[in-house]
Image: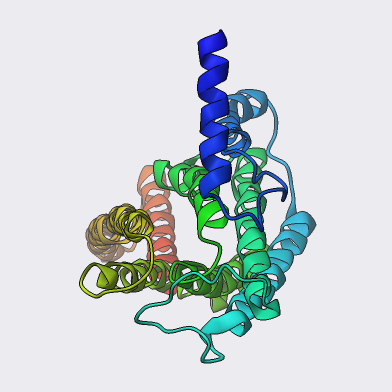
Length: 323
């Protein structure tokens, strides 16, 4: 026990000696363990506890809550994007090729440091994306990609705020907050009801937009491996490899959600069209006889209704863009 306590003290001493003194006493910044505990608790809650609690309960209707939540996330992301932008990236103070960390107490520098902490805090608010899926019993939305993405981000950003709050890696936050403005606007429209569904045709392009984000972050981070820049190489790899991992996770999701589903839907559509044609031919054949027995009349009626139903299904698929 004494050895464990000594190791823990040495670890905290290492954190304090190498960490940024400006964020040392800020909430959750003294040690990575509270953040790690929250992330692990999140994973256990959404994969085990939440589904078990909701198993025999009806899904909750959360329309107004979702509208408020997504509106909050849009406004919060807009504020974060503004703070990160005005602290350096759009004012000419930051260089897109190489931007070392400024450890001074200049007001503009401190503005970026505060923006970094609030960006870190925003990763916890995004846990509610998953909580609402669980409460609405949309467990299929709680995919491996979803849980990894939300569960790992607070821990990833913690290291940035602790050691390098500012500089080159804040480009990640700049791009990510802009993407979240667009993403939560989509979710907001979706939550407002079916009358807004006609404006949501761009869902798959949103996923593409997210993938482009990670490519931009990769290029921006890994360029420092080929030029001389006073920025920690460890964080270059940390940010760059995160972008690589998320790119491939989102790419796999895109293939599963859109490429394969479209092929499957085309197959269903083709099958429906064959059934419609067969039913139509049978109806036309029977219509040549003017008199019907009762069984024939019943069969005729069933075939006609089936044909109309299949045509309706196909028409709805076409209207929804499932072609």
